[in-house]
Length: 413
Image 1 (cartoon, rainbow, N blue to C red):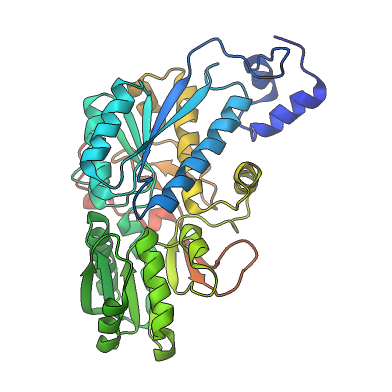
Image 2: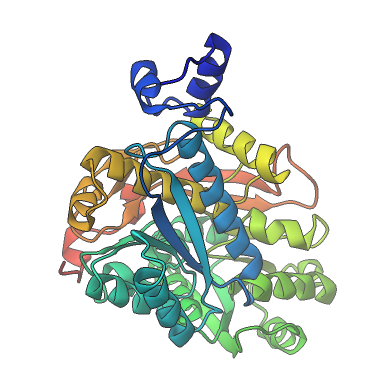
């Protein structure tokens, strides 16, 4: 190994975020005269499949941003098992056929070792089947449909995103407390939208509430005027938006323009976040939402993640950056624990593994269905900046409180 100055050595130690002991770090770094890390082996390749050209596109690029920051951190510390890590991106366009072709190309042509990503539930389920057929581990970062850890679960797929059950059970009590238990729902015509609608309706029923009416809108809708007018006529306490991405952004802008808040009709839903609040701007952001992560989480690991995204991309991370960063970190740390990229060994290294999920409580992958059990946050959107971000945090709900009992599972791995 080339000589490394004490100052450079300490800089590299800090870059690992404590993931490696200093002695291990010294053994893993080989610096040539150029100052770059040198590797003796071919890269470990991770294929990221995301809807980079659909109404979910803004969130998708943040998924890639977070994953890239994680990969940079590992590579600066000498890689994984002495090998560099590389990301290969693919666009699924929120389309099942496109996603399946992309997954097969990544595996057969690009020879990736692992797959991660996806937002749409039907896309995630299709890629999960390809991953199992081709013996590749697949880490779902964005989809929340219950089938992923239920009837459609499989041995090769892990789900980093909280399930619709977890999100709805966490946020519904706060929506009911603020707006009452008589709701109107607007739902996008996708598997994701229907899953959110069913989960929110079930959580509302558990609170003794009633759905006064509902309307479905096509995926990619930009004009929600008619839907909100119908909601207003029903006189609910709140309009629940089972939407995401640009559909949710457009619906919230229409909610503000329609003046529903002045009619004392609230708004909210299963999932929001900085990736929604940012394109909306403070003036249009409103309601109570389930949140995956928030930049106000005050832990050392969370602050290190925030700074990494700011340094590379010059923006505060969103929860989608969080997903990309933390999911990628767990894949690569599992490879380190397994001592190999062999799929079955890495799966075993993940099953039941407890880790720092950048939240208050520890996170873990439930062995029986590969669900990431984690804190779910609840936030209230504000029309002004509250330190970092667009939301006042109302609650941190432990994952075990909302993830469901063993006898509720339909998963057979």
